[in-house]
Image (tube, rainbow, N blue to C red; front, top):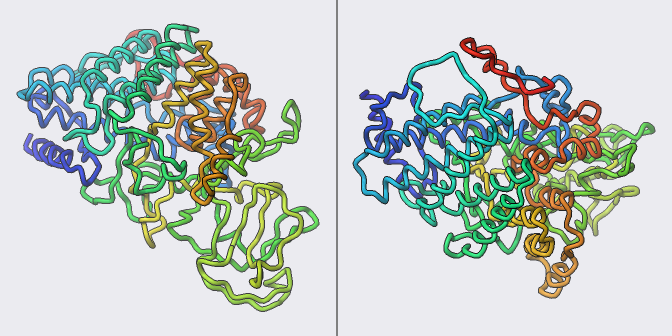
Length: 603
C-alpha cells in the first residue's frame, strides 16, 4: 500500500495546482475497498477516471470512431482504417477502443460513491467529490448508450472477477444518466473550484450533459417532455452564463487560440502535459496510436512538404504536376503530416445533390461572410525555407526565376473556388507556389484543420500536443437548445439561438463596424429555415472535427440518409443497423458463464 499512498498524495497535490490546469492521474490496476477509505483515495479514484478520458479523446483510434464514415469526413491517403470509414467489414474485432476504459472507469466511480460517503471531510467538500463521481459515471454511460444501445448497467463496486455479463435496456441506462447528472448539478460549484481546477466538471457542465441526455432520449422515444426539458435547461444555462463564467468569444477564431483554451467559452476538457512523470508523453510521438496523447493536430494534415513544388500546372490527364522542389519543410505551425481523415469535398455523381460536395456546397456556404471556414482550415501555406531556382525545364514549369522569402512567399494556396490559369505576379513579386483549387483536392492534398494546432512544440513538430482536448464548448449549448426547441415545435426560439452563433460567425477583426453589421444581418435566418438538416449543417460549421459527428447523426436518425446522400465511400455499405456499433468481440468471448453476451443485430 505504500506505493499507492505515494501516488495518491502526488495526485492530491497536483489537483490543487490551478496554474498547471491539469489533473495528475495515477489509476491503479488493482483497487480494493480500503483504497477509498481516505480523502486521498477518493480523490485518486476520480483523478484516475479523468485519465481514462485522456486515453480516448484526442487519440487516433477513438477520434476516427467518433468522426470517420460520416458526411463530414472521408479517408485520407494514410487512413489505415477502412472499415470505420466505409462500414465495409466493420465488426467487433476492429471497433471499440473505449469499451474497456468505460467500464473500468464506471467501476472505480462506483467505489468512490460507495465508500466516499464515509470519508472524513467537510460536508461541502464531500458533496463536491461525490458529485464529480456522479457526473463522470453519467458521462461514460452517455457515451456507451449512444454508441452501443443496451449495455451492462453497473451501480455496485465490483471486487470479485466474474465471467458473466448481460446487457440492460437503454431506457434503464438513461434513467441512471439523468439521475446522476441531476444530482451532480445540484452539488457541483458554479465555477471550477479546488482541487478540480482548469476545466473539470462544474454545475453548468453537468446541466449541459443533462440537456443532451434528455435530447438524445427524446429522439429515441419521441418524448415531447424530454425535448422540452432539454430546451429549458439549455436556456437556463445561457441565462445564467455570467454566474457560470461562460460566454462566447466575439470572434469565432478566438475560441481556438491556445491562450484561450481555458477561457470563457471552454466548458469541459481533457488535460495534457509534457511532464515525463505522468508517463504518457512521448517525444517524437513514439506511441502515435494512443497512450493518452493528444494527437489532434496531426489527423487531418496532408503531406504539405511533398506537395509544394514550384508550379501551377496540370498535365493532360488533369493531374497536378510538381516540379520536385519543395518550399516547405515540416514545422510545428502546420504540424505533422498524418493524412488519416480529410474533409469530404468529393462531388456526388447522382441523386438530389449531384455535382455538389458536402464540404463546400452544403456545410461551409457563405464563406465570404461566415468566418468559420477561414478559422477552421488552412488554405494558405507560407514558405518556411529559402529556395533559389533558375529557369529550367526541370525545376520551373512557368519560366520564372525566384528566391523564396521565408514567412512571406506563398508555397501552397488551396482556394475554395476554381482558378483559371495561375497568377504570374503578385504586385512586383512573382508567385512561386502551387495553386490547388477544389477540383484538384484529393486524398493527399486538401485543406487541413488548423484550430487544434499546437505551435508551442517549437522544433519538435512530431511531438504530441500539450493543449487540452476541449470536449465541450459553450457554443454547443445554443445548438443543443436549438435542436430541442425545434423538436418541441418552437422554431422561432430555435432560430433565435442559431442566429446568436451565426451572427458571431460574421464578425471579423479586419472588418469595419459597418462591414460587421452588414455581415451579421446577412447571416440571419428565419424560423422557416430551421430544420433538422439545417441544424446538422450548422453543427458542421461550428463544431467540425470536435469528436461528435457520428453521435449527432445517430441521435437525429439521419446517419443512413446523409451518408447515402453525401459520402461516396460509405454509401454502398451503410445499413440501418449501423446506427449501433458492434460489441467488441473480446466482451462476447469472455462471457462464458450464464447467458451469452449478445452482439448488436447485423454484425
